[in-house]
Amino acid sequence: MRWAGLALALACAGVQAQVDYPSRPIRIIVPFSAGGGVDLTARELAHRLAAPLGQSIVVENKPGAGGALGVRTLIAAEPDGYTLLLGTAGEVAITPLVNPAVNYDARKDLSPVALVVKAPNVLVVHPDVPAQDLKGLIDHARANPKSVTYATSGVGTAQHLAGELFNRMAGVQAQHIPYKGSSQQVLDVVAKRITMTYASPAAVRSFVEKGQLRALGVTTAERIPTMPTVPAIGEVVPGYGLQSWFALFAPAGTDPRIVQKLNAEVSKVLRDPAVIKTLRESVGEPAYDAPAEVAAFIAQDIGRFEKIVREADITLRE
Image (cartoon, rainbow, N blue to C red):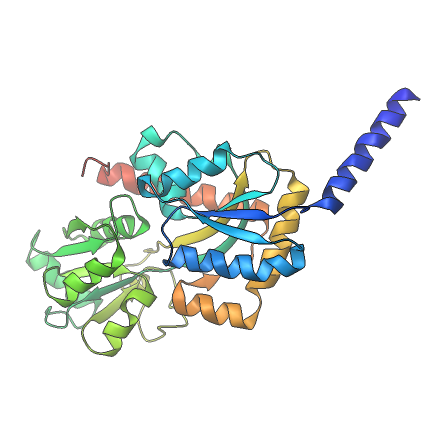
């Protein structure tokens, strides 16, 4: 009888925890400074989730160590659903592969809540580069080995891995030039200091429309809605495809019922036509996967990233 009473009490406590969450404000950590795509996406989520969850949601910018500081802050938080992280493929999945000193593994240390957006990059060149299309760029790069350069927002980013994957699959030897952010890397291609760059659609769209850059391909497996005339790189380089993503995480060990509740509310937000329009124009395509599907997706991506990192020998010594 005593054990039956205990079991009932525990069951009631579990139901009560589910009903009561959230009972105080939630914070979303952004591992970058304010104003970028991740920050703006987090603020959009915070604004739209506050009403259905019945609590205020605060976005806390925690830049440092290429985003790793924000990830470690989440890992150290209580797994109670009141501290979340909006992270990207870079600091969450790739950084531990190129810099083991960060000492975390997303597959063990984080609970995926929702895959918020899949974020493509666009390969662009200056119009003076003798390449009207992707095949022309490959021919040009092969004819001028090691003189072709490509800029990215840093070592170990999804852009960097996209460039290394293109090098290997297209049989070219473009030299990587890492920057500390996307704005200067794009401007240096416009100024013809760099041959090409991989950058977000939002970062290059105005330059493409003005004829200051030529878009040759997107890194996703298929064309994207906001640039439908730009081919997927995989149309010319069969099997190519690599994209970044933004995902919402809780610390490992968070109650699955809390994770599921958050996932359900985020999914509703991402189906709002206004949110879809905003995300497509700024960062990428909204995603609607359940937590288990997000975990499987991220684990698969880590495996793909690991192979590229190993084959290209990418480390932060670069």
